Length: 92
Image (tube, rainbow, N blue to C red; front, side, top):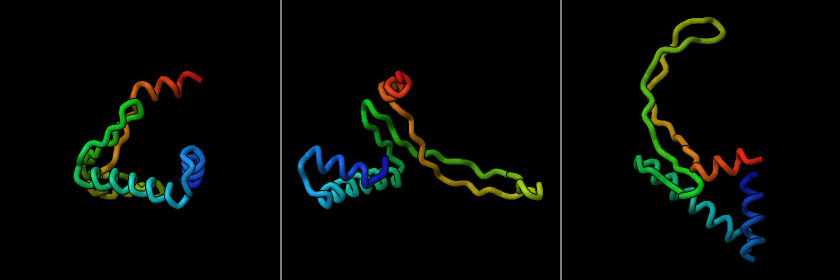
């Protein structure tokens, strides 16, 4: 599913124009992104939770040459699906 597919589905389900659906979806994504930037956990019961984790700096290898390279520390977004979502995905 793409964003356009989601907008078309929301537009049809709620009888609203696609532009309004786009504003709602964009606002939702903005709010989730803002919360994650602050390091907050974003949870949707029955769907899952987004969290931010710190990944430590480490030494890796260039796959072409085998030379060591430094990989800097960074923050990453993680998603943990709710058990209801996992069960529905695995039921098929």
